[in-house]
Length: 180
Image (cartoon, rainbow, N blue to C red; front, side):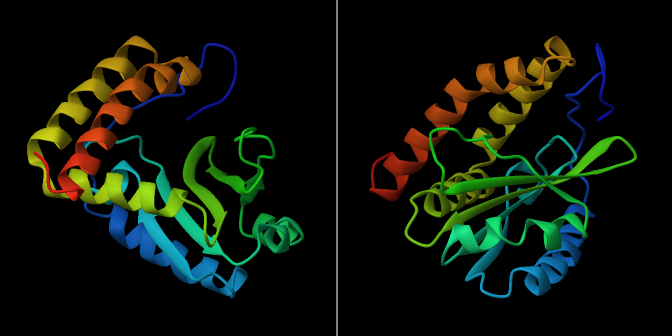
């Protein structure tokens, strides 16, 4: 998205079948920059076939020690990743990087330590949406409505989406536990 006052920062688009290939290319790049990563995975809406999304590839990297990554931010910066310290103020072990090209976010990189509960949450959410077409459609409808309403207000878009994400996570946990 373009940056600046009043700029549209939230745009939800139809699923793009090129997103998995874009992730695969970025995964190969990141494997060279984060050689100690135990996992580099495609997460978020762009990882769910058929789901509309902001056209930003969300990537999860699981590492032994996030401090090692903090010390290598220059290597990530050489590949276009801008470290955003403080993005998750309640979790100092969750590092966030964004990649921007031509004024648009292209990738988000979430780096967490082995042992963090976040990888399981990201996977559970992704896999639930991949397995439940109706939940994915509900989520897509909400995202489109919020993007229309809050195109220039990314924080508000995220905040209003959060309650439904929590609901979907509760459903996914019930399903995993054998409930309905």
